[in-house]
Length: 287
Image (cartoon, rainbow, N blue to C red; front, side, top):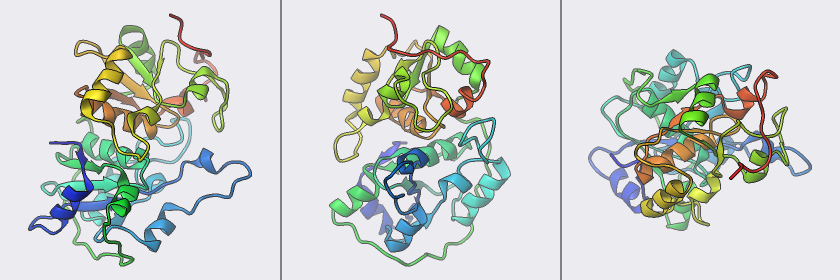
């Protein structure tokens, strides 16, 4: 099953006999609203102003993550609560799901990864998200759809997962990718977490380089070349982390498009940096 779907493909499926469950995951990262700039409209406000017809809004912070704390800003949600939220949105075990966000792909990838991790067999991300849908002339709606309750029952463990110790070990024996911007990896700036830097041994691989200027994923061959240049191979164990387990899910998705499987460290830097006993590296990776 492909991990991505284009806007023309989605438009055709939505008018078919068995349309997918459509989830709107528009969301604004906290650190992008810090400082003098006014906060962007919330995902719920964006959804109310217009969404792809039939889409149900999902709140990333409330439904795709647990409460912030020692495990990070976006830890795994409670399995039962996640399952209930997905069933309310109409997600069923035997019906495909398509997720989208405003266009950067981070939030949609988090939903993709979480549904797949919880055992759903058919989840795709709308390539380019809501921005691509609008750019390609897709219809919009302000109607909140009434959807029948789904029957999805989460079964965690379908995708590989890392904790802090596992991430540290993987950085020594395999390839651990840091999906944050390069200046955060190098420790030159840190807009939200208590310590700047990266997990020792991790390799910088900013998520933004997975996509083109319009937010759509680069072709699989280009992505494969990118990750191979960073050290990925069919014999290399791969893992990814970011600030709080959101943009890293985008990296796991990009790796999947390129033909690689990678484990996600959900706690990511927000968990790692909160523990003063864990080592921190700064600067570029030697060599």
